[in-house]
Image 1: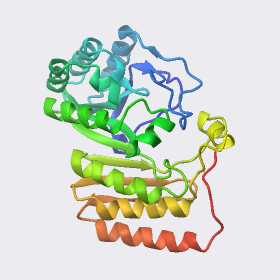
Image 2 (image 1 turned 180 degrees about the horizontal axis):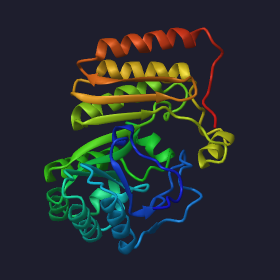
Image 3 (image 1 turned 30 degrees about the vertical axis):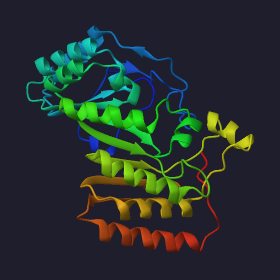
Image 4 (image 1 turned 45 degrees about the vertical axis):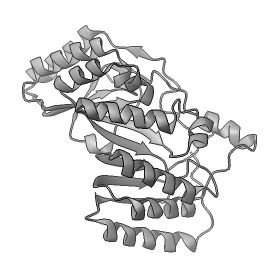
Length: 287
């Protein structure tokens, strides 16, 4: 299939077969995000989805894990998702898990019966863009949900039998609030128990709506030293077992491992990165 837009998925899904079922992001209003601003959201015809499944099957493909794209495939109606899942299992009998990105509203809009049906049909991991543990930051970034709503959505999807994974961004709370955000995120994760956490440390694109907030004096970006310190505090306070992967593309720096098993090793890596960054000029991640 000719892919439209840019591929965006968690690094945990690097071995999954990516099956586009939509183009762009149905929400597409987060102030920091530029991934889908150039695309008009639309659902792909089921005939096109089935054609891609058939193509891969005829080429000998039978992947164990399928990742549905694009920006938030769980935004599709439960009925449409169930039809897609039926097709996936028809063409890929070896498939044991179907994963995708989701938003908090896309979960809350579905009934408990629909969530349970999707889990039984093979939906395993849902990736949620939690981003911050602070309600005022979520509101400023126009995330479209509160922390209470996120907790409710996660409780319902876990009760249905699905696994929740979290996307977040150190630096999203702005300069001087990294420690506050780290403590709030640790409390949230310890309460909700994600299976995986992926941290894409924040960078600011000059064409993003967030840049207008910076020009208006409503947001001041944190530098990478503060972002590293925020990440270290978060990892030191997580008590739930979780697979963690954190990126700082502009430095570049990456820390990953399984908590609590790898905590000491991960903190040592962060300490070294913090010490190295302390000796440099303050660096803000611009794109």
